[in-house]
Length: 375
Image 1: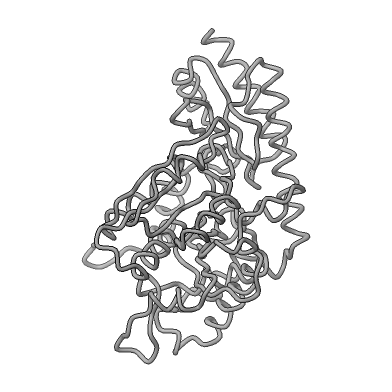
Image 2 (image 1 turned 135 degrees about the vertical axis):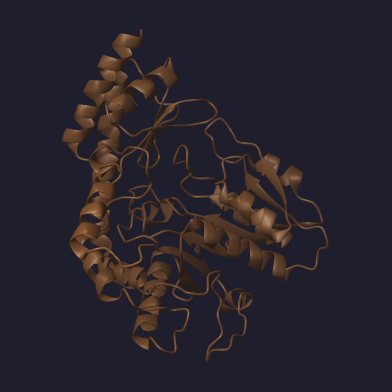
């Protein structure tokens, strides 16, 4: 830190230079986050000083959070869910498993997750002292139900299903997991961090939410397809007493249930604003557009004799590209930001709202040149 400080203009110049080194979303196919909606940015700025770590001081902002949870609940098949706005899927997943652990009296608890589960469950298991058991996947890269059933024992306290897997955008058979959870009286958490604001707007009805009696909690991130500002995650519980498992007393007037103490009300206001502004029809238009781009990407890939690993379910497409590492390296040199899946290795592209037909066409033109070169 400088002794006398630096002039505001000089600081702003440095910040601009730093920001210019960051990726432009126009060329990003690897991120599950996107540019926030302009209204979300305005709302975020208006509530920048609010802190829901102390809701007694900010009752108006707390009321917005309650409204956001109610809107998410109605979208996810219920009018009565309880929850709060988190920093994102990692916090939500940790907290959901924390509730499952606290509800159980098992001395050596285990949790069964799909092999496709997000790495946040590794963090959760480490923090909470849980054994993490990974169920295998079927040919469509969904969790294999027989594998799940074989892993359950008397120490199993929770099952996890994914609605929008990180690598392939696949949806696990949540309805079957719900039947198992109900019959075995096991907590079922659904990680819909990505898919929670996509699946309700698809033409096909995928049951993954609180319409299924066995679903205990759901993670959904408005800062992904919700186009809210970062950090805007969401955690919802079917029963209020599950949320109460997270409550602790503080030196302030009200108890806390969040993992973090200080919580920005700005992202909550941003989420409220964009939810109210877009409504269901607005989100339906966004999802339809992203799915249309996914179909365009699939058609262009096939014209290059590149097959998808699976038929895209959400707006993620994984392509079986030969000489993948070399292809990715050359794409990166052309300033395209892409990612790869692990097993099998494939080129992974996410059609987020910031992607345009023009940028998609430009990307595939470069991909065609790169493939021709490496062959």
